[in-house]
Image 1 (cartoon, rainbow, N blue to C red):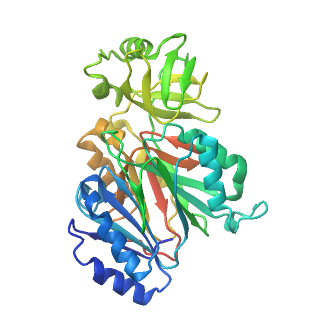
Image 2 (image 1 turned 135 degrees about the vertical axis):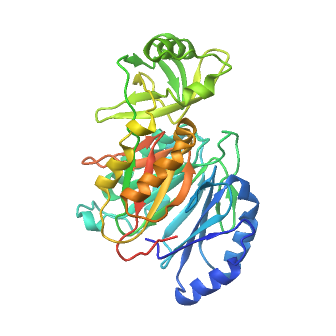
Image 3 (image 1 turned 45 degrees about the horizontal axis):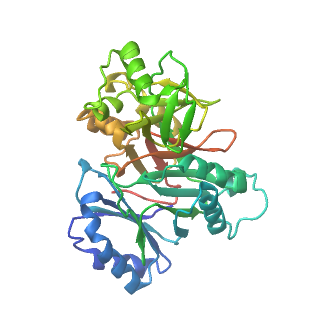
Amino acid sequence: MIDGQRLLPDTLEGLSQTLDDWQAAHPGMGLLVLLPETGKGSVPALQSACRQRGIPLFGAIFPMLITPSGFSSRGAWLLRFDKAPQGFLLPSRETAADTAQEVVQAVGVGLSGEVTAPVAIPTLFLIFDGQLPAIGSILTGIYRKLHRRVFYAGVNAGSETFQPMPCLFDAERTLGDGVLGLLFEEAVKNVVEHDYPVSQTLMRATSASGNRVVSIDGRPAFEVYQEISQREFGARLTKENFYDHAVHYPLGVVTAADVLVRIPVAYDDDGSVHCVGEVPPNSMLRLLRAPIVDDCNCTLKIADQMTADGGGILVFYCAGRRMHFKDKADLELSDLAKRLDRPALAGALSLGEIDTMPEVGIPRFHNAAVVCLQCPPTGACQP
């Protein structure tokens, strides 16, 4: 997947020399850039440098980066592909179905027939603007067209303030409310885990639209969320402390296979609650409790699923998870690096995470998760 990786300082010092050296050795290279929100002003310089050299560029802006020293709001990860993958940057359309169709058309070049051999299945890596309200429906629409012809992986970019911000870019454009995609010819190992305990209470989202839950069990969603939080976990939720509590007590959408975390981030005067990620109408919900780091087996579960076949690892860590664990999120990253036998990790803080459901191949959208993407044995991918 990636044979070169470099963390540049805020000033992008050494950018030109790095690109010149890489392009001399790999004339067909492509570039994926991860920036922290504080570094969004670097986008024009990156675009200009890549345009001058004819290097395909794709990039996204995240709340923070994951660096060898931990979470950081400084620098820029430059991830080199020796052979530029097929990529696209698309604005969202009026409906989720229309956006899904645009993605399918962009991916469809070179995909034909039903692929069944695992070694032949490419990986579709998607980065969405976290402000999009119907990412789950977009993923479903993509799956209805592509089915199991690709493995699905991805994350959400954007601002941790959940305010609109252009956060996706290529060599020519910068946009928000869209999706960036890369199609890798080979399968890329992708592991997503959250390890959140589930409450006993089962509820129904009787009215919901996109990422907005209007009512639960026929009552205003905020009222029910407030009531269950106190009854199940003793959390006294008010409108003033809403976000401080919500990150510790997210909602869970019950599926046939598992429970998908949905972190509430805002509420309306009518009592509706906005989440990171879509909540389908009439879906069954449970209240979740974020674990303390000492009781969480997330890193162990990830390490058990990752293969030791060489190549490097990229990590994306949910911003809501970090807000819950606070300083101990750094300890979880250190533990993950140790379990994966990596001296340091590279990646970014994300606002939603995507994987492929085992066995059935359906894409899923998560909150509060840790994502690990493993490069194939041919890659170095080390910081």
